[in-house]
Figure 1 (cartoon, one colour):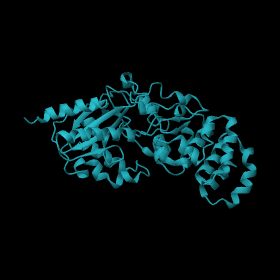
Figure 2 (cartoon, helix red, strand yellow):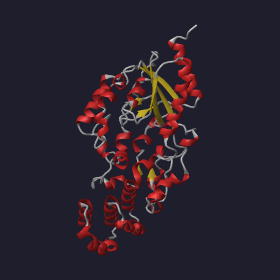
Figure 3 (cartoon, helix red, strand yellow):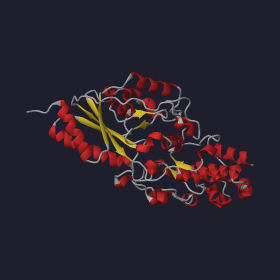
Figure 4 (tube, one colour):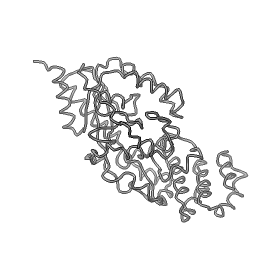
Length: 375
Protein backbone atom coordinates (compact mmCIF):
# COMPACT_ATOMS: atom_id res chain seq x y z
CA UNK A 1 0.00 0.00 0.00
CA UNK A 2 1.47 3.33 -1.07
CA UNK A 3 2.08 6.03 1.52
CA UNK A 4 -0.18 9.06 1.70
CA UNK A 5 1.31 12.57 1.26
CA UNK A 6 0.93 13.15 5.01
CA UNK A 7 2.80 9.91 5.76
CA UNK A 8 5.57 10.79 3.31
CA UNK A 9 5.92 14.20 4.91
CA UNK A 10 6.10 12.69 8.41
CA UNK A 11 8.73 10.19 7.29
CA UNK A 12 10.89 12.92 5.71
CA UNK A 13 10.61 14.99 8.86
CA UNK A 14 11.70 12.08 11.04
CA UNK A 15 14.66 11.28 8.79
CA UNK A 16 15.76 14.92 8.68
CA UNK A 17 15.88 15.09 12.46
CA UNK A 18 17.71 11.76 12.56
CA UNK A 19 20.36 13.17 10.21
CA UNK A 20 20.96 16.05 12.59
CA UNK A 21 18.82 18.86 11.23
CA UNK A 22 17.27 20.92 13.99
CA UNK A 23 14.16 22.14 12.18
CA UNK A 24 12.14 21.19 9.11
CA UNK A 25 8.97 22.50 7.55
CA UNK A 26 7.15 22.24 4.24
CA UNK A 27 6.07 25.19 2.11
CA UNK A 28 4.06 25.57 -1.08
CA UNK A 29 6.14 26.30 -4.21
CA UNK A 30 5.25 29.98 -4.38
CA UNK A 31 5.85 33.12 -2.34
CA UNK A 32 3.33 35.49 -0.86
CA UNK A 33 2.80 38.75 -2.71
CA UNK A 34 4.27 40.67 0.22
CA UNK A 35 7.61 38.89 -0.10
CA UNK A 36 7.76 39.53 -3.84
CA UNK A 37 6.86 43.17 -3.24
CA UNK A 38 9.63 43.58 -0.66
CA UNK A 39 12.16 42.21 -3.13
CA UNK A 40 10.98 44.57 -5.88
CA UNK A 41 11.18 47.55 -3.54
CA UNK A 42 14.61 46.50 -2.24
CA UNK A 43 15.98 46.40 -5.78
CA UNK A 44 14.18 49.52 -7.00
CA UNK A 45 15.64 51.60 -4.18
CA UNK A 46 19.12 50.28 -4.87
CA UNK A 47 19.39 48.81 -1.38
CA UNK A 48 21.27 45.82 -2.82
CA UNK A 49 24.33 47.97 -3.56
CA UNK A 50 26.76 46.20 -5.88
CA UNK A 51 25.18 42.76 -5.37
CA UNK A 52 24.08 42.76 -8.99
CA UNK A 53 23.30 39.05 -8.91
CA UNK A 54 20.23 39.82 -6.80
CA UNK A 55 18.74 41.86 -9.64
CA UNK A 56 19.97 39.61 -12.44
CA UNK A 57 18.00 36.60 -11.20
CA UNK A 58 15.19 38.44 -9.44
CA UNK A 59 12.44 36.59 -11.33
CA UNK A 60 13.75 33.18 -10.23
CA UNK A 61 14.25 34.44 -6.70
CA UNK A 62 10.67 35.73 -6.48
CA UNK A 63 9.06 32.54 -7.81
CA UNK A 64 10.31 29.00 -7.04
CA UNK A 65 8.45 27.70 -10.09
CA UNK A 66 10.39 30.11 -12.29
CA UNK A 67 13.65 28.66 -10.95
CA UNK A 68 12.38 25.10 -11.47
CA UNK A 69 8.95 24.62 -13.11
CA UNK A 70 8.59 21.01 -11.89
CA UNK A 71 8.56 21.91 -8.19
CA UNK A 72 5.43 20.90 -6.28
CA UNK A 73 6.52 21.51 -2.69
CA UNK A 74 9.56 22.78 -0.79
CA UNK A 75 11.16 21.19 2.26
CA UNK A 76 12.93 23.91 4.27
CA UNK A 77 15.63 22.66 6.64
CA UNK A 78 17.26 24.48 9.55
CA UNK A 79 20.59 23.79 11.23
CA UNK A 80 21.31 25.51 14.54
CA UNK A 81 24.59 27.45 14.83
CA UNK A 82 23.89 29.14 18.15
CA UNK A 83 26.99 30.45 19.97
CA UNK A 84 28.01 29.01 23.32
CA UNK A 85 28.98 32.47 24.62
CA UNK A 86 27.87 36.07 24.20
CA UNK A 87 28.44 36.76 20.49
CA UNK A 88 29.01 40.47 21.14
CA UNK A 89 31.77 40.00 23.71
CA UNK A 90 34.60 40.84 21.25
CA UNK A 91 32.99 44.23 20.50
CA UNK A 92 34.22 45.51 23.87
CA UNK A 93 37.83 44.50 23.16
CA UNK A 94 39.36 47.11 20.83
CA UNK A 95 42.62 45.19 20.39
CA UNK A 96 40.68 42.16 19.12
CA UNK A 97 38.68 41.44 15.97
CA UNK A 98 34.97 40.67 15.97
CA UNK A 99 34.06 37.92 13.51
CA UNK A 100 30.44 36.97 12.90
CA UNK A 101 29.35 33.82 14.73
CA UNK A 102 28.54 31.97 11.51
CA UNK A 103 32.11 32.34 10.23
CA UNK A 104 33.99 31.16 13.34
CA UNK A 105 33.73 27.49 12.40
CA UNK A 106 33.80 25.55 9.13
CA UNK A 107 32.05 26.87 6.06
CA UNK A 108 28.39 26.11 6.68
CA UNK A 109 27.70 25.78 2.96
CA UNK A 110 29.73 22.57 2.87
CA UNK A 111 28.17 21.12 6.02
CA UNK A 112 24.60 22.02 5.11
CA UNK A 113 24.80 20.94 1.48
CA UNK A 114 26.32 17.58 2.41
CA UNK A 115 23.51 16.91 4.86
CA UNK A 116 20.85 18.08 2.40
CA UNK A 117 22.22 15.67 -0.19
CA UNK A 118 22.06 12.83 2.35
CA UNK A 119 18.39 13.56 2.94
CA UNK A 120 17.74 13.95 -0.80
CA UNK A 121 19.26 10.53 -1.54
CA UNK A 122 17.12 8.99 1.20
CA UNK A 123 13.97 10.54 -0.31
CA UNK A 124 14.87 9.43 -3.85
CA UNK A 125 15.43 5.89 -2.62
CA UNK A 126 11.85 5.65 -1.35
CA UNK A 127 9.81 7.92 -3.62
CA UNK A 128 11.63 8.13 -6.95
CA UNK A 129 11.31 11.47 -8.66
CA UNK A 130 13.25 14.59 -9.45
CA UNK A 131 14.37 16.97 -6.72
CA UNK A 132 16.87 19.79 -6.30
CA UNK A 133 18.99 20.86 -3.34
CA UNK A 134 19.77 24.53 -2.60
CA UNK A 135 21.77 26.47 -0.06
CA UNK A 136 21.97 30.28 -0.11
CA UNK A 137 24.19 30.49 -3.20
CA UNK A 138 21.13 29.82 -5.39
CA UNK A 139 18.43 32.39 -6.28
CA UNK A 140 16.08 31.27 -3.52
CA UNK A 141 14.29 33.59 -1.08
CA UNK A 142 14.90 31.22 1.78
CA UNK A 143 13.64 33.39 4.65
CA UNK A 144 10.13 33.89 3.19
CA UNK A 145 10.04 30.17 2.37
CA UNK A 146 11.10 29.34 5.93
CA UNK A 147 8.31 31.56 7.23
CA UNK A 148 5.80 29.84 4.94
CA UNK A 149 7.08 26.47 6.20
CA UNK A 150 6.55 27.45 9.85
CA UNK A 151 10.23 27.61 10.88
CA UNK A 152 10.06 31.23 12.00
CA UNK A 153 9.24 34.72 10.80
CA UNK A 154 11.19 37.57 9.26
CA UNK A 155 11.78 40.03 12.04
CA UNK A 156 12.08 43.79 11.80
CA UNK A 157 15.76 43.29 10.92
CA UNK A 158 14.63 41.15 7.93
CA UNK A 159 16.35 38.03 9.31
CA UNK A 160 14.58 34.87 10.39
CA UNK A 161 13.54 34.58 14.04
CA UNK A 162 12.57 31.19 15.44
CA UNK A 163 10.57 30.57 18.58
CA UNK A 164 12.65 27.45 19.14
CA UNK A 165 16.12 28.58 18.06
CA UNK A 166 16.17 32.36 18.26
CA UNK A 167 18.32 34.02 15.61
CA UNK A 168 20.66 31.16 14.83
CA UNK A 169 19.42 28.90 12.03
CA UNK A 170 21.22 28.15 8.78
CA UNK A 171 18.68 27.40 6.06
CA UNK A 172 18.63 25.05 3.10
CA UNK A 173 15.92 23.80 0.78
CA UNK A 174 14.96 20.71 -1.16
CA UNK A 175 12.63 21.41 -4.06
CA UNK A 176 10.42 18.34 -4.55
CA UNK A 177 8.19 17.01 -7.32
CA UNK A 178 6.25 15.29 -4.52
CA UNK A 179 3.09 17.22 -3.74
CA UNK A 180 3.06 17.40 0.07
CA UNK A 181 0.72 19.35 2.35
CA UNK A 182 2.33 22.58 3.61
CA UNK A 183 2.85 23.31 7.27
CA UNK A 184 1.13 26.18 9.02
CA UNK A 185 2.75 29.49 8.26
CA UNK A 186 4.49 31.16 11.21
CA UNK A 187 3.10 34.54 12.31
CA UNK A 188 5.08 37.60 13.32
CA UNK A 189 5.88 37.75 17.03
CA UNK A 190 8.05 40.90 17.10
CA UNK A 191 5.28 43.00 18.65
CA UNK A 192 6.38 46.48 19.68
CA UNK A 193 10.03 45.44 20.15
CA UNK A 194 12.63 47.35 18.12
CA UNK A 195 15.87 46.32 19.83
CA UNK A 196 17.36 45.03 16.58
CA UNK A 197 16.77 48.36 14.84
CA UNK A 198 18.27 50.34 17.71
CA UNK A 199 21.32 48.09 17.89
CA UNK A 200 22.50 48.63 14.31
CA UNK A 201 25.80 50.56 14.43
CA UNK A 202 25.32 52.09 10.98
CA UNK A 203 21.53 52.74 10.97
CA UNK A 204 21.04 50.30 8.09
CA UNK A 205 17.27 50.00 8.65
CA UNK A 206 15.36 52.88 7.04
CA UNK A 207 12.16 51.38 8.51
CA UNK A 208 11.09 48.19 10.29
CA UNK A 209 11.31 45.20 7.93
CA UNK A 210 13.45 47.20 5.49
CA UNK A 211 17.23 46.89 5.10
CA UNK A 212 19.54 49.17 3.14
CA UNK A 213 22.42 46.74 2.59
CA UNK A 214 24.69 49.60 1.50
CA UNK A 215 24.93 50.61 5.17
CA UNK A 216 25.02 47.10 6.63
CA UNK A 217 28.37 46.04 8.12
CA UNK A 218 27.87 42.47 6.92
CA UNK A 219 27.51 43.73 3.36
CA UNK A 220 30.36 46.23 3.67
CA UNK A 221 32.87 43.75 5.10
CA UNK A 222 31.90 40.75 2.96
CA UNK A 223 30.08 41.59 -0.27
CA UNK A 224 31.44 45.07 -1.00
CA UNK A 225 34.62 44.82 -3.05
CA UNK A 226 35.85 48.39 -3.06
CA UNK A 227 36.58 51.22 -0.66
CA UNK A 228 34.10 51.47 2.20
CA UNK A 229 32.55 54.96 2.47
CA UNK A 230 34.61 57.09 4.86
CA UNK A 231 31.56 58.13 6.89
CA UNK A 232 30.76 54.50 7.73
CA UNK A 233 34.25 53.35 8.70
CA UNK A 234 34.25 54.79 12.26
CA UNK A 235 30.89 53.09 12.91
CA UNK A 236 32.26 49.64 12.10
CA UNK A 237 34.35 49.41 15.27
CA UNK A 238 36.37 46.20 15.29
CA UNK A 239 33.97 44.17 13.14
CA UNK A 240 36.23 42.67 10.47
CA UNK A 241 33.85 40.07 9.00
CA UNK A 242 30.10 40.38 9.33
CA UNK A 243 28.03 41.76 12.17
CA UNK A 244 25.76 40.01 14.70
CA UNK A 245 24.40 43.01 16.60
CA UNK A 246 20.82 42.95 15.33
CA UNK A 247 20.64 39.16 15.74
CA UNK A 248 22.24 39.00 19.18
CA UNK A 249 19.93 41.49 20.91
CA UNK A 250 16.70 39.72 19.92
CA UNK A 251 14.69 38.70 23.04
CA UNK A 252 13.73 35.42 21.37
CA UNK A 253 17.32 34.27 21.89
CA UNK A 254 16.27 33.29 25.41
CA UNK A 255 15.22 30.02 23.72
CA UNK A 256 18.47 29.67 21.74
CA UNK A 257 20.78 26.74 22.34
CA UNK A 258 24.44 26.21 21.50
CA UNK A 259 25.19 24.42 18.24
CA UNK A 260 25.73 20.68 18.48
CA UNK A 261 27.25 20.17 15.01
CA UNK A 262 31.03 19.88 15.60
CA UNK A 263 31.91 21.64 12.35
CA UNK A 264 29.94 24.72 13.37
CA UNK A 265 31.68 25.16 16.71
CA UNK A 266 33.90 28.22 16.94
CA UNK A 267 37.60 27.73 16.29
CA UNK A 268 39.66 29.23 19.11
CA UNK A 269 41.83 31.21 16.69
CA UNK A 270 38.75 32.84 15.15
CA UNK A 271 37.12 33.85 18.44
CA UNK A 272 38.30 37.41 19.12
CA UNK A 273 41.71 37.07 17.38
CA UNK A 274 44.29 39.81 17.96
CA UNK A 275 44.15 42.59 15.38
CA UNK A 276 47.93 42.91 15.47
CA UNK A 277 48.27 39.29 14.35
CA UNK A 278 45.66 39.56 11.60
CA UNK A 279 47.47 42.65 10.29
CA UNK A 280 50.57 40.58 9.53
CA UNK A 281 48.82 38.19 7.11
CA UNK A 282 50.26 37.85 3.63
CA UNK A 283 48.29 35.92 1.02
CA UNK A 284 49.69 32.52 1.99
CA UNK A 285 49.13 33.03 5.72
CA UNK A 286 45.61 34.29 5.02
CA UNK A 287 44.78 31.16 3.03
CA UNK A 288 46.20 28.87 5.70
CA UNK A 289 44.38 30.56 8.57
CA UNK A 290 41.02 30.59 6.80
CA UNK A 291 41.18 27.22 5.05
CA UNK A 292 37.71 25.70 5.22
CA UNK A 293 36.22 29.01 6.38
CA UNK A 294 33.78 31.26 4.49
CA UNK A 295 36.16 34.15 5.21
CA UNK A 296 38.57 32.78 2.63
CA UNK A 297 36.14 33.78 -0.13
CA UNK A 298 36.66 37.53 0.27
CA UNK A 299 40.41 37.28 -0.23
CA UNK A 300 43.31 38.73 1.71
CA UNK A 301 43.08 42.31 0.39
CA UNK A 302 39.46 42.90 1.37
CA UNK A 303 40.05 41.24 4.72
CA UNK A 304 43.09 43.47 5.40
CA UNK A 305 40.96 46.48 4.41
CA UNK A 306 38.57 45.52 7.21
CA UNK A 307 41.37 44.84 9.70
CA UNK A 308 42.98 48.21 9.04
CA UNK A 309 39.66 49.97 9.62
CA UNK A 310 39.42 48.14 12.95
CA UNK A 311 42.98 49.20 13.80
CA UNK A 312 42.07 52.81 13.06
CA UNK A 313 38.97 52.57 15.24
CA UNK A 314 40.82 50.99 18.17
CA UNK A 315 42.33 54.20 19.55
CA UNK A 316 45.41 52.12 20.39
CA UNK A 317 48.59 54.07 19.59
CA UNK A 318 50.47 50.82 19.76
CA UNK A 319 48.90 49.85 16.44
CA UNK A 320 50.67 52.62 14.51
CA UNK A 321 53.44 50.24 13.40
CA UNK A 322 50.91 47.55 12.40
CA UNK A 323 49.18 50.03 10.11
CA UNK A 324 52.33 51.72 8.81
CA UNK A 325 53.77 48.46 7.49
CA UNK A 326 50.95 48.38 4.91
CA UNK A 327 51.81 51.75 3.35
CA UNK A 328 53.89 49.79 0.87
CA UNK A 329 51.38 46.97 0.36
CA UNK A 330 50.92 45.83 -3.27
CA UNK A 331 47.15 46.42 -3.00
CA UNK A 332 45.91 50.03 -3.43
CA UNK A 333 42.87 49.05 -1.32
CA UNK A 334 45.10 48.02 1.57
CA UNK A 335 47.43 51.04 1.17
CA UNK A 336 44.50 53.43 1.31
CA UNK A 337 43.17 51.94 4.51
CA UNK A 338 46.66 52.00 6.04
CA UNK A 339 46.70 55.76 5.48
CA UNK A 340 43.23 56.12 6.98
CA UNK A 341 44.11 53.99 10.00
CA UNK A 342 47.28 56.00 10.70
CA UNK A 343 45.39 59.26 10.47
CA UNK A 344 42.82 57.94 12.96
CA UNK A 345 45.56 56.80 15.32
CA UNK A 346 47.32 60.15 15.22
CA UNK A 347 50.32 58.58 13.56
CA UNK A 348 50.96 61.29 10.99
CA UNK A 349 54.62 61.38 11.86
CA UNK A 350 54.83 57.68 11.04
CA UNK A 351 54.09 58.27 7.37
CA UNK A 352 55.01 61.91 6.65
CA UNK A 353 58.19 60.87 4.86
CA UNK A 354 56.38 58.02 3.10
CA UNK A 355 53.76 60.49 1.83
CA UNK A 356 56.35 62.76 0.28
CA UNK A 357 57.97 59.80 -1.46
CA UNK A 358 54.90 57.90 -2.61
CA UNK A 359 52.19 60.43 -3.43
CA UNK A 360 53.65 61.82 -6.68
CA UNK A 361 53.76 58.40 -8.31
CA UNK A 362 50.61 57.00 -6.73
CA UNK A 363 48.36 55.67 -9.50
CA UNK A 364 45.27 54.96 -7.43
CA UNK A 365 43.04 58.02 -6.97
CA UNK A 366 41.49 56.72 -3.77
CA UNK A 367 44.90 56.25 -2.13
CA UNK A 368 45.83 59.77 -3.24
CA UNK A 369 42.63 61.10 -1.66
CA UNK A 370 43.40 59.30 1.59
CA UNK A 371 46.88 60.83 1.68
CA UNK A 372 45.47 64.29 1.08
CA UNK A 373 42.70 64.00 3.67
CA UNK A 374 45.20 62.74 6.24
CA UNK A 375 47.67 65.56 5.65
